[in-house]
Image (tube, rainbow, N blue to C red; front, side, top):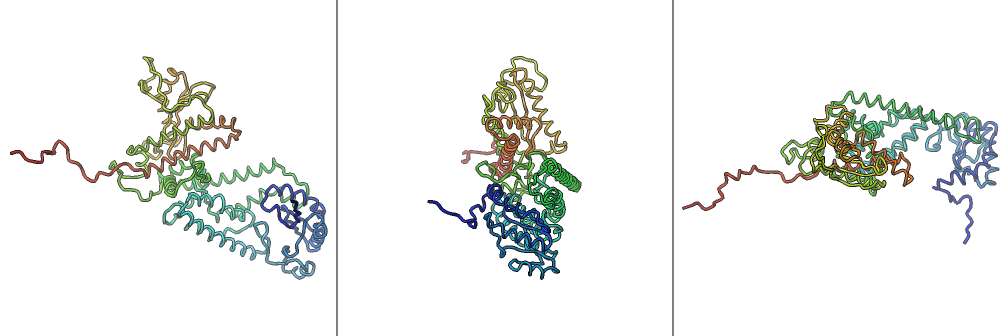
Length: 549
C-alpha cells in the first residue's frame, strides 16, 4: 500500500538525522527567500524560525515567510507565533500583526527566555520550582538505588539548569532554593545517611570527580560564570547571525582556541578551589582527597551503572564506596573486629581474617590475566612456577626458593613471543605504613620492593621481563601498571577497531570496579564467629567426670 503523508503529519519528530537531512534541505531555499529583508535579522534552528528588528522590518519578513513558506511545505501558524515588544510599541504591534500573539513581558525561546527582567525572574522561578520537585523525586529513588539516582542527576537532570545558566544572564540568586534542595535532600539520600552536609563537605562534593569531588556543583556560584563562558564560546556564531551569513562555515581553529581557553580557565578555577579546600582539612582527609583525585580513581563515579558490564553497585556498596572515598564514618559496623582489634576502614582493609586481602589480590590478578587473553596475548598463565636458581649468584634480597611463583606470565605482551612476568600488589594508602609518604612514593616503594625480590631472577634465569603491578584500594595505580594498561589498550585497538582512548578508559574502569567491589566486600564480609568467652587451657581440664575410689 502507498500512503500520502502531508507536511503537517510530523513524521520526522524525534529523528535526529532529519535535522541535517529533511529540515536542512527543505528549509534552505525558504531561508534564502527571506534573507536580506531590511530591518529584520532572521535566525533558524531546524524548522523553528525567528527574527529580530524593528516592527516594519519584522512585518515584511513575516509576510514574506507566510507567502513563500507553503511553496516549500512550511506552514507558518499565527496562533503559535509570538512577538516580544517593549510596552511603548505594544499598540502598534497589535495593529501591524492582528493575528499574532503580542507580549511585553517576554516568552520562552529554545529553552531560555527573551523579554523583561520581571519575565526572566518569573521564568526562572517556575523552572527552579520544577527542578526542586524533580530533585526531591530523585532523592526518593536514591533511597533505593543511589548509584542510579546519582548518574541520573549528573548526566541528566543537572543538564537542564546548566543549559539555562549558559543561556540566561544574572540568575544565580534565584537558584538558591535549588541548591538548598540538593544539599539537604539529595546529597544525604545518595550517601544513605541523615546528616547535615557541612560547608566543607559541600565544597568537596562540588569539585569534578577528577579533582576528588562528586561533580555536584554549587550552581549559585557557577551560574554567572557559565553564562560568560557561553557568550565567549558562541562569539563566532553570534557574529555570523548579526551579519546574516547564510553559508556559515565554522572556523574550527578559532573555535578550538576559544574552547581550549575556556577549559583552561575552568581547570585553573578548580585547581585553586581544590588547594583551598585541602588547606582546611585534617591530614587524613587531605590525603583521602588527594587519593580520590588520582588518575582513574574516580572512573567508577563517571561510569553509567550498566549491569551487563559489571558496573552496577547496590545501595550499601555505593554508600560504603563514598564513605571510604571521603573518610566518612561507616554505617552499622561493629566496634570490634573478630580478631579483637578496634574496627575501622583501615583495619577492615588490612585484617587477614576472612581472606579478603587475598580475595582482593586474586580477583585483580585473574581480571588482568583475562584481559591479556582477550587481547590475544599468548601462553597466559596465573601463578606460574619459576625455574630453579641452581646456584646462580643473584643480588641480595632476591627470592631464590624453588617454590617461588609470580602472579601472571604471558607472551607477546611487550614484544612478539617474549615472555613477561607480572606480580600484583594492592595496598591501602591510608594505612600507617603508607600514609606518611607522598602518594607517588607509595607506589614507587612497592614497585621497588617487588623488583628487588624478583627482577634479577626473572632477567637472569627466565630470560624474560618482570613488571610489578601496584594498585591502591582507592583506585590509583603505579607507573608500571599504567604502562601495561596503555600497552593492552594498543593491542585491544588493533583487532577490535576501538579507539585507543576508549580502550584505555574501558580498561581503567574494569580494573577500578574490580578493586572497588572487593574493597567494599572487605568492609562487610564475615570474618568468622566472635569469641564470647575465653576458653580454659585444655591442660588444666579434668576430663575424668567420675572421681576415683
